[in-house]
Image (cartoon, rainbow, N blue to C red; front, side, top):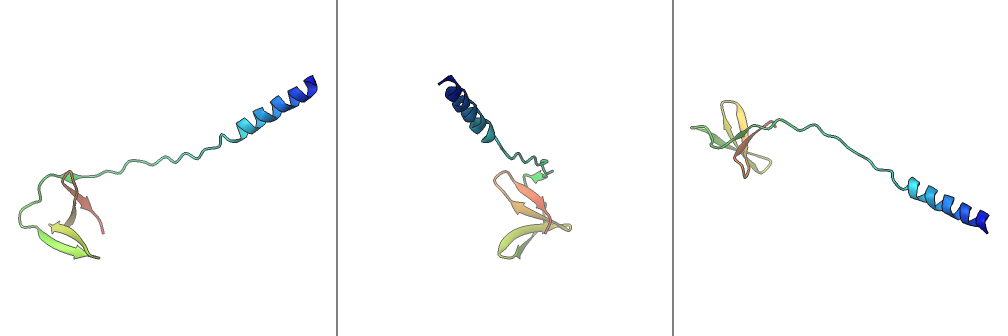
Length: 72
């Protein structure tokens, strides 16, 4: 009786330890430049149906917080 209880307890312990596998992915934060207002004399450009604002060789995308410099 005690032998069966010991094996049952050991089996349950092994099942519990086996299911703890997790995958952790660590990503470095990206550097984002947010601009509150666009520079003067900007141009509107559409690429693949999306609107971008361009000025001085840089492209900006509109977000909630302002405009973000993007690379296409």
